[in-house]
Amino acid sequence: MNWLQFISSIVASLAWPASIGIVALCFRKPLLKLLPRITQLELGPGKATFSAELIQAEQTAQSLPRTSGVGQATATSPDDPYLELAARFPEAAVMDSFKTVETAVESARKDAPHIKRSTQREFIRNLFEGVPGGQEIISLYADLSMTRNAAVHASGKHISSAEAIAYRDLCERFVASFKDALAYREEFLRKRRADLNDARSAGD
Image 1 (tube, rainbow, N blue to C red):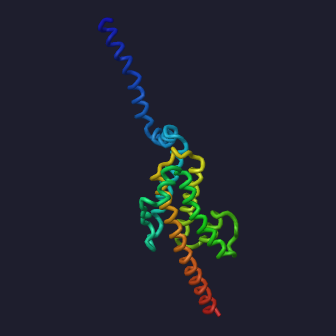
Image 2 (image 1 turned 90 degrees about the horizontal axis):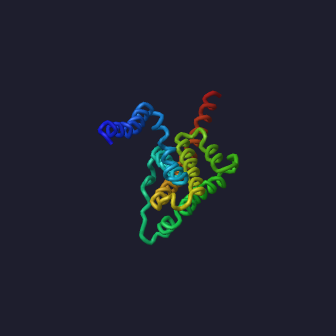
Image 3 (image 1 turned 120 degrees about the vertical axis):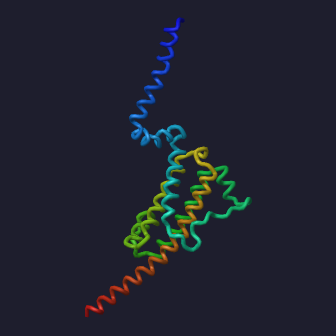
């Protein structure tokens, strides 16, 4: 191989990477939008979907008012059975955590027979409709439900024990905030009824 052939081969080998770099530079914005899909392909649909839903739920939880000590991570001890469940079967741990959410909502449904009984998500939406701060509760329940559904369709290797523990913390935060929101709702509705009665009395 002479020098001309050598130089030609180098130019040819560099042309393809350079072309890719130019294309990436020109189309960087559309490519950035595709990154979540690329991550999903690399990590597997179960992992990418669960992680994305968990992050969304954590972001939604940030908008909740921090009352009654809510928002603090659950203290865990070495003998906490949930830790072993999260380590061996993280998807089962996620589903077990969501049961605490379902139990709290079902308890509220029994105490509010006048609210249209349907799915839990619809019940929460009807319960907090028009109540200040209720949208955050509605959104977090939806996010937790979606995250639980993602865990159902994922195998254990796609969910880490740390993610399962983080999910439990979110569920416990929801339950505490849900109870606070119920108390606030009762006070809000009581005050609104009193204001309406005062307005009617003034009109008479």
